[in-house]
Image (cartoon, rainbow over all chains, first blue to last red; front, side, top):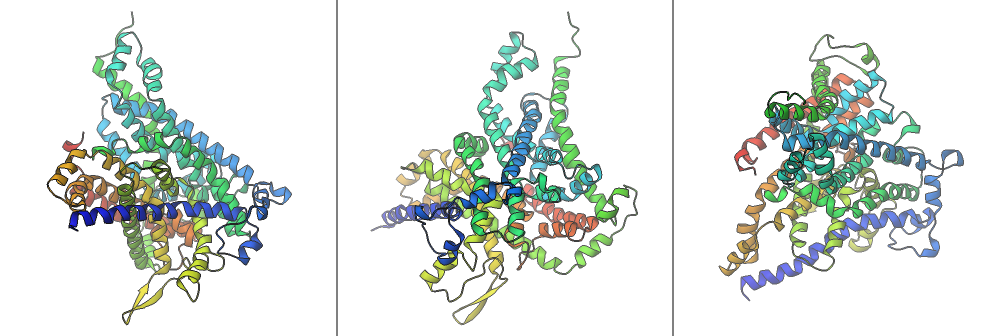
Length: 288
Length: 315
């Protein structure tokens, strides 16, 4: 057997080993999360190594405890879910409102300083959240915005704008300029060109971008922790769950139920739009 | 008829500025100005209690930097941060590359697997950090349970709370930083999908003739990878390495949620958080953040000088 056939055979096998290993590594934690969330806690302590729990043993008490309000002895996650939804949707709407014209200007219009603007967005994208945490914490304390969902939303908008502009710009460059010029010749003003021609054409990219921004806002933890920790009413789900694990003794199975509740909306959204999302993110990457 | 104001060129300039200004306003107000303010804060003695009455014209001092550099464990935390950032980056890139190569050619179930590979990246960090915590728990964790069953571990490993263990290999006692390795593996696991996505996109854009030609010339699979595929990926790999390094270097939530910065995982960003929430020392927190940013700038400058695609190559 020469080297070529040996390598070809080796990699044919190795490829499946890699695939199986990666599939296990990525899927198992999520399977484990769901399995634990329906397991009675005594059952987990008796046999921690079980890979399967028979359906007759399943319990929904964990979900009841996590979701029901604090007054009725639960953890009140439903209210926190509403907070997260509010902040995330607000972030998406505001980010799109601001970044669609921004992306259009960056792609199509030559204005004074457009190169510098491009560099600024790159810098903002690379600038780590933890460095912004200190001054924003102080600033929002001074302004009295610290314990508010509005303040949090403003921070998220600023954090998601660079990615949003990047994604939209990548897409807008693929729309031929001649389409817009034709509309302009037919008498559209620049605003009409944007709202009647460009935006409908860019609708898939805008959707993908909206989902990505939603994901970032929904998953965010650091700023929620810094800004909202004092006021339980305003916690997001991520923060609520983190506080749950650190506070009074809560069974791990209840924590897992909370994690499932936190994860499900994102995973559903992600699968609904996977292709759009991955294309939106990586378009431009293949140019090397 | 409406009077035309200025030339077309001037109109375009005005429209551009008008459309970009909301974006600029938000970025200036919530990103640029706060960064500048961090620099000011780092040179003032400010605590959270007196923050309301302090302004720009407070006395400037180097005291915060003395506090930060002199605080116990500062230099070791610099080392920890570097090891964490580099380890997490390398692991994420290697896993991402392996995944991209394995999923390159179509097969049944590829779409499903591709979606599965992205799960760690899209799932909320709090949720996945908890699952790992529970899986790795010494009391009821499934990893320790199966470790005992399959590999005969005589006692459970406290993956997230044990600073160090030594293993004897060929008569040598090698110290292993357990908790730090665990958070690095977590980081690699959580971010390999990001590398995977970009590498896969790049792989699929490589024209097939290139490899066909190499194959005809008698190149084996490893040779084709080494001399045809890898050079094509070099640009994306350099970019991903830089992005991941910068992000890992200042990562907060992953480490904070898994270990709280204990057991030898006190990365720089967790220290910033501690300065502000445990000591209410805004000045020291800013100084620590600034030190972090300074190191980051050095790495960015190196990347831009040596690895970044030159502007004229850009399409």
